[in-house]
Image 1: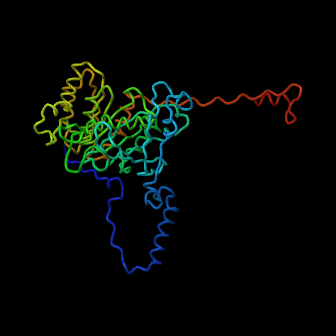
Image 2 (image 1 turned 45 degrees about the horizontal axis):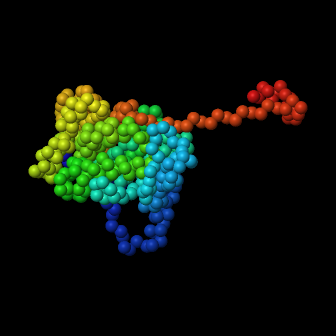
Image 3 (image 1 turned 90 degrees about the vertical axis):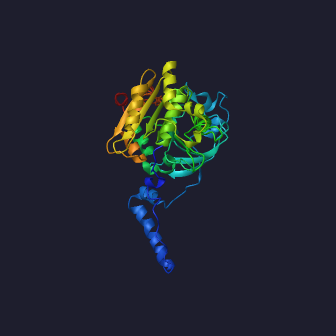
Length: 400
């Protein structure tokens, strides 16, 4: 895979080194400086400044999304929210995961973190989740939401920089796109993609290694279904990834077209190249996007939608265009988003998503459906035997 240089610190100032403390600084002066910083945060930008300087940090505190525990308690009862779900909506099945706050965004939305023990893969790793504002809107309480499983590049362990680095702008891009009517309000699910910091597992079940393919294609979606309102059809499920995560995202959609419909693959290599595949050629071929695309074409479906993103300041465009020429036919629909002056990093890829890729993927996936606003209650006509004392009958009629 291309070397991925997107550290979490690129999302903000968290990675900046702090200078050494002065042991002779008087305690009163330190207290004065702290109070001054607090006042600055409150006056110069209010809550946003406080968020940026992390002065009111509640990171690590327990949080929940929606009414997961309540709907998961008895999904088949036919009463309450479980009995009123829209057709095609899968209510949370439980058991409910325990989330802690990983980040609080300026708009009030939150990124939660939990540790998932994969029942099918046997792998245990962390998963970050963000839900849009619409998810907790009562108007959408009966609706499913589309899921975008977002994979990082680099080692992808023990963190996923889409979840730990909100400054990269992925969550804000979805929010802005939804408000402008160009993007669906996705649930973003951000798992780790590797099992350690030493190896790349190509998002696959490499014989004799942790089963990272099953982790991402089975355990992570099962976790989402247990905790969130999701679509029963594959039309509500997609992947997004960059660099090594882009390879995994592309591979999963082509390998499991019955489960996932679309992918945004950024700065991506096309074929598996982990050294761990040595001596396992058949297993490697079973996880090769080129061979999977050929198999899908021969089977004549189901249709999948692939959006490549490539910056003009990185390599890899020739590989994406070659894949599009050879396999972009029949049920494999392809598109290329060229990012002018884009580099091999998350901020460039989020810019590409803003410039077209989010709108593209939103057109091929299912959208959440709000309930119609309740009609206003009709006004009661004034009694003929007891006309209003504050206005003559004709005036009350005109007001209606």
